[in-house]
Length: 97
Image (cartoon, rainbow, N blue to C red; front, side):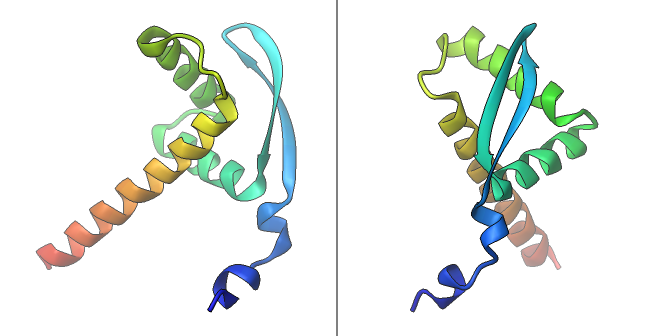
């Protein structure tokens, strides 16, 4: 039942810490590699580096809602949202054929 999940490469869920600046403040963020790859994809799609994308996202969240209580969770959910939007666009493109 769970073979597709249990059989995945452990490298996908190994955590990596990256150091970056959020609005001028030096910080580090620890995420699973699969999330880092997705964030890298989002940044590349937007034509920016991953640190710039993350810093911009942080700034926009600050403006809308104030300081997030768990920014790494917000990043994971941003990755999920990106995948949901990608799936929806892909499904729409297939339906239009």
